[in-house]
Amino acid sequence: MTAFEGVKACVFDAYGTLFDVHSAAAAEAGALGERMQPLSQTWRQKQLEYTWLRSLMGAHADFRKVTRDALDFALQAEGITDTDLADRLMQLYLRLDAYPDVRPTLERLRAAGLKTAILSNGEPTMLEAAVTHANLADLLDAVLSVEEVGIYKPDARVYQLAVDRLGLAAPAEIAFVSTNGWDARGAANFGFQVAWMNRFGLQLDRLPGEPKAIMSGLSELPGLLGQRME
Image (cartoon, rainbow, N blue to C red):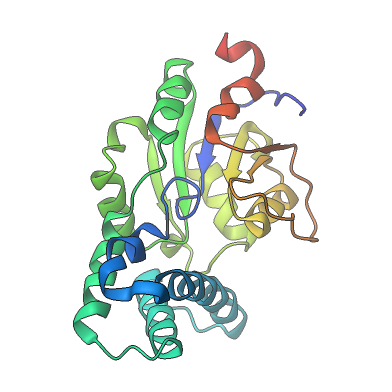
């Protein structure tokens, strides 16, 4: 891995990177049974697909709407018609579990004097709920939503939002971290120094933009920042 240089801020994707998107379905394991894993996988895949397709269609809807549409698709695919269960799953999505390495890593970055922020497809109230539930608010300088620009990642306007709101001179002053390979590629193509956090041993998407590093967990990030973390 190549150490990052000139970094002034660390910016993180939220869903799948800081927060476990499958923890909502896991909390309803008793009701879902063997359908839990396929439902959760379909829910996540359709959620992402709908952000991309709506962006291409010029038909933006916020992430809460996209998430519910994706959930309804996944429930129908599994033959589930329980509307109370659907409502519970949406409420659980506001209280996703943070991965164990999130808070310790953010504490180290803040102690080193780096700005920290979330840059997410999430709708602002969804993000606020997740951050509050995970007790991370004190470790973040900003929680940025695509709703400020009205289009989803990997549109360049989303990544530019982080540069502007953090008051930085250039994209390369940001170390960006995402578990989503397409997001890592998009951010690198924009000009961020990117660490793809490959928590799940996946193959990197074949798209423009080359991540500077590949990590298996968030705790590896401070080591990429060299002298700042000593």
